[in-house]
Amino acid sequence: MPYLRLAALYFCYFAALGAVFPFWGLYLKQKHGVSPLDIGELMAILMATKTVAPNLWTAFTSNYDPITQVRIAAFLNWISFLGIFWAQNFWQLALVIGLFGCFWHAVLPQIEVITLSYLQDQANNYSLIRLWGSIGFIVTVMVLSQASVNYGLQIVPITILTLYVGLWIVSLSIPKRQFNTSDAVEIKLNDNILARNMLLVICFLMQVSHGAYYAFYSIYLEQYHYTNSIIGIFWILGVSAEIGIFLSMGRIMKYYGARNVVLISLGAAVLRWLLIGLLPEYFGILVMAQVLHALTFGAFHAAAIHLVHRYFVGTEQSFGQALYSGVSFGAGGAVGSLISGNLWVTYGATITFIAAASIAWAGMLLAWWYLESDKIKYYNYI
Image (cartoon, rainbow, N blue to C red; front, side, top):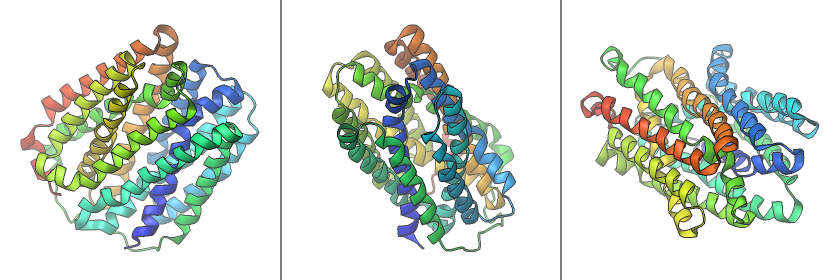
């Protein structure tokens, strides 16, 4: 198994994410004069591409194997991103962001398929490969936190472009292989269709609740006079906690089961958004809130990936991962960005984060009602 090359794919993909989420809003605000409302809309466009791009890309490139799909999408991604250096107004920015977002978000579901295909019955080792994405995120945040001070925020798009090119180059090194297209594992979907659909709804709500965090967290901290370096440290802390949980997810899933992991993660999201929204002046409280990222993203995502892997087998693997990515990170992220942008302008930051906590609470109630242990017990296979 090409462990290092698969790890490098995750590293480059999420390293680019480490430039987008902490610094993209600041870059748009300072270098393009974009308002908070417009930032929310531009981030919503980026998230919206994740709603449609994975499924459309899977449909249009169904004749190609996942590795070839990744190579083509990664190439078109960095080519289209070049337009950001010429964009001058909101609509030009929206066009470029929408274009490169489509190709960027088409990559990850296929990377997941490739990785899980190599792992096969050792799927518990997924987190050990995926954690390199989190490491990439941290490295980018650390570098850009200082580089943005020394060279200005114009370094942000240059960094993103470099990482996109790196993603494409690494994809060329992944050896082609025969993917399993047989339905070797029988899952009684008809008996669990409600649980499957509700899982997607719950994933959607979790990402909606993250909308304010991803779009405005850096701007929010800046309003309370935290420096770029401190803001970067907060982002690094969250992802460091995420890495820690990835290292332990095999044991956690085996001991607690998928339902409890999802419930605990959603409960942690409720607490996290309330802490950020109500007590931003307290450094220690913000540290605690960032540590909860281990649950709100790391544990939740690892549990969801494994559930999707069990629901969609054989030839449906690409579709399943694309559906999960599109519904949660795509639709959920887009709706979250739009809602948070409007709430931010109309009611302010505190109400926005309280609303995020309420959405996570709704997801937790749905998980409690519909993800009953007797319906998903055979997913606790790690």
